[in-house]
Image (tube, rainbow, N blue to C red; front, top):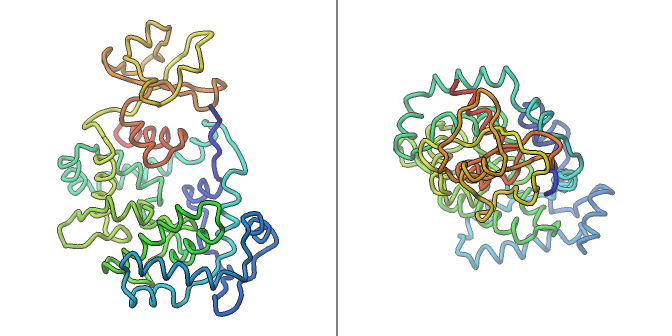
Amino acid sequence: MNTPAICLTVIALMLGSYTASPLGAQTQSIVNPPKASQSAATTLAQQGRDPNEFPAYIETLKAQARLQGISDSTINSAFANVHFVDRVIKSDQNQLEKKIMLDEYLARVITPQKIEQARIQYQQHQNELNAISQRTGVQSQYIVALWAMESHFGEIQGKEDIISALSTLAFEGRREAFFTKELMASLQILDQGHITKDELKGSWAGAMGQNQFMPSSYLRYGADGDGDGKIDIWKDTSDVFASTANYLETEGWKADGRWGTEIVLPEGFDSMLAGTKTEQGRTVSQWQKLGVTFKAGTQQPASTQKSWIITPDDNLGRSFLVFNNFRTIMHWNRSYYFAISIGAMADAIAQ
């Protein structure tokens, strides 16, 4: 098991110190050949791409959009001012740069101030949260925890032009199929009239709104929380909460279930038993027979409950017994660190 690599940009975003479109950041219209920095140019060269080919590449994206049924008016509007975004490639390059341990990560993203603010928001939105929770079975504290971590309660949504960012990442080529699919989804969002081109802003990687959905996630999980006929995850908290809950419910959330609890592993525990694959699950009593114990003062789950063991720092740090809802959170983000932070924040909110 590899130690999760945490992007420092993401940490900064969670802490509220990162702006997706900093003052003075330069973009380049495709009217003129884009200028890539030396590092970005090197990345493009490794993928067999020349920055001067970006305008021609945009034409292939337009043709693909037409084949998928996107209207000419939407295509013309969406790509009217599309530009090559050098900093997007830099951000993609830097994602796996630095590793930190779980405790340091949690100390950065779950501060006393953020917990206090989350509890205030939890109380202020109690009525709409309760209604959504009753419909979906997703506890309100988890909805608020994801809201806190993804956009600091809607305060940090990113200011990057989504069409330009996704076009640049598709052109880069490292994950061309993925970002092309997300670009087509963003064009569908525009074509269906959910938002205007000028309002379609988000993170460098294309995540949007207060819950930072990728465009395809918006199309699949977006939900109208207040019944106004719109799905506005940028400004409408009811839609943000409903969409978040719909995602979790659709991906297998168990109503009223817990995420996990910290445990103590016996000496010589076989690390190959740890992991969240279906076949690695055992009942709580089966783990206890293998010598797993619970930390003093923690609430013990039912002995028959299926659970999994994770050791985020490769047995160098803390260990956790996690349940189905933890695995569902990992559908949202495949990082153990992130999923633990959501569970820990939800627990802090509910206390």
